[in-house]
Length: 272
Image (cartoon, one colour):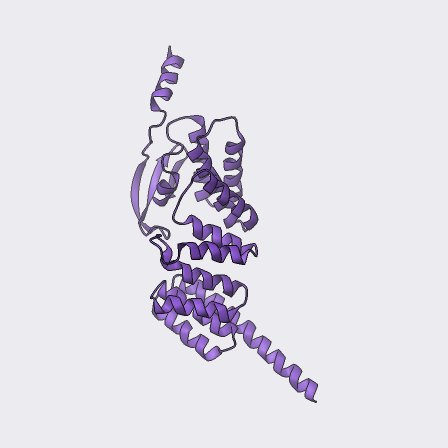
């Protein structure tokens, strides 16, 4: 009968990767540099990163309930509703649907991403480490984990992770020095930040971003002239997100100038 035929079809399709219909767009994925695509699935049309295929690998294939739930979570994530996506991934992880070790690693990773995007960094670290225990591997994972560690105040751990990929054949080895400099910027430690940014600049690693980092470091160290010089160099060399960088730099610059001005007023008042 129909139910037996349907059950057999689901069994036969188990483990088969479903290729959704897709159309290439002109939107470039900021993560992988490739054109994003529109995929048609159960929940309609949505713009996807091809990058997600690399992250998912062979997990959640076929037409089963768990694959449908995972697809729902993924589409919700790309809709920008990170809390709802997190709930879907968490419920799937806790459900009685049996997930393979690879699928548990993928779920932990995506839960980590949701937590990180939502600013819940300790939870992000826990889930990234859980993903690693399940054997999940992705070139971006050390960067995500290090940034989350730094945001929780675990500076030494963040730097240790980044040094672990430095000067290796890792895909993002060239970002390690810039990332370490950024960790020190968040600590308001301009001197140590500048050391790492200068090393990145000398090696032409993340060149424009490292110039921008140096601009921030000089400004924090109250060398406003040098800060402006490197700020202009970063823009000329096409720093990523020039508008966002300019806004952040000007805020840091204004805070330092205000602090310096207040310090001078206090000195004058004290001498009077």
